[in-house]
Amino acid sequence: MTTCPYCGHDNEAHTCVGPIPAVPHDGDYSLCIACGFWGIFEGGSIRRPDRIELVGILRNPECMRVMDVWVEVMKLQRLTEAWN
Image (tube, rainbow, N blue to C red; front, top):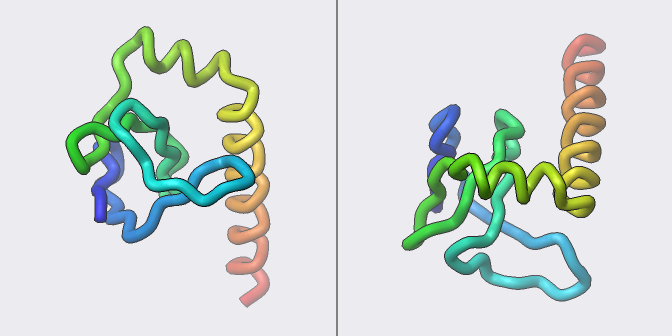
């Protein structure tokens, strides 16, 4: 389990973007499902990216697609909550 360095959400599972399930390694990116901020795996936990790493994330088309999907899922979740 890891904890988001921004919102403190405990993440119990991780997956990767790609055709084959993978275990995260040091330096891999992580998007918090709770707050949508990016982190970097390091030593079994997640830390905030430095400025250079953040620029790399924001320039990565796969990361931006993941972020777009996260935004759409959050919209649907809020709409669902409003209907209940």
